[in-house]
Image (cartoon, rainbow, N blue to C red; front, side):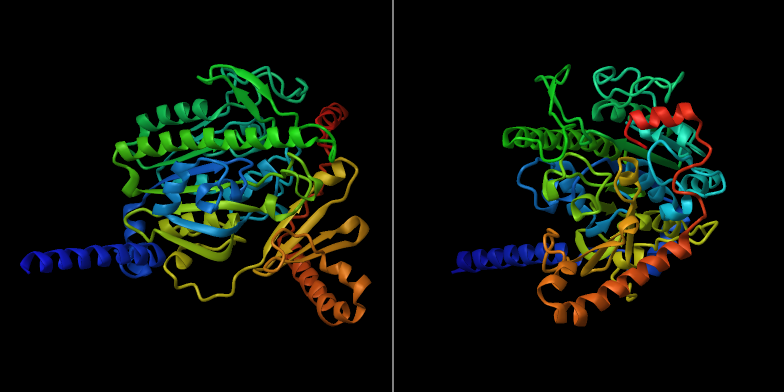
Length: 487
């Protein structure tokens, strides 16, 4: 009888523990109590900061976001232990513009870096790097692609800004980029995840005993998608990703997607190596870790293959965002609210108690993490200037938690989608006018006009007056950019 009672008690404990684990994941852990007390702690102790940017990574390619095709155990673990945002959005499907917004908390319409290769961040636009450097932080950046070279302005205030790809295994086998566009110091155009991680860890080992800000940029999922031999010592092939839209066979598409997924998994391995070293050095508890993609990738949806800069669909704008707060902050939760990558910089400022030098377009994510943000979700603005460079149209979009409007100014064209009913964006509600004029006039036309008004408000209140295409480019630079498809 006693044995039965012991077994029953043990079973009850197991059930309670299991139910507690479920509740723990759903409700998160708030060991430090209220948000105010937590912010007091972070502002007094000043956490280290690790920013991991994952170039061209679709949200649906991570296991923690539901992928069955890729192995991403390290980012999945970070998601499980941290805060996963299911509806995070970038403001530009282009690397340089998006990263500039991440580091500034500003829309491209204001900071002025609206495309790759054409713009340099103005010195009077503040970044989180400048604030951290002024606060005594050691600052190191390790990037993996030429579009983030220091000459474009993001290198300011970094003690080390490593953009040297000259020793990469990928040097000389990838893009055909004119030497006159990147003369002199530039060697190579990208590097692999293992190479950038090793460089970052070498720097971190020397600086880990001081307050530090480390930014590591991974480029592997970006085309071209490479195929490697077993020990990764050489490239054995790459997917054909440069053909015109609609010209890929099913076999070519399948192979390209397979290699894209493999690049994602390779990147995850080295993100894991980075995170494990941080843990081994005893830094995890005192470090804010942010992992975010700059944009996604088209894998054939909307007849858009292996590109990202020319459309504003969800596959390109909705990105993974994972935040692991330091000092036992909330974790183990998923937040479905609409957030934006421009909210990252305000979050850093908030945790440190630093007042930004100018008013930012983003807002801190800390209140959401503590479940005390009662404000209405913000709209999310995005733009691309890629289409004009290739004979198309500039595109702008505005997204709410339910609807998205895509606007093409040159032709005054509109797409309108109900993202709750149509997450794949297959049913343009503007087309309803052809089928049911009364429904369109009574419901969708007013909605279209309201979203367009809100879109215009974002543009008008954030515009810096910088022209869409710089006027001071010489003919040689224009020729080089045109050969790259940038103009």
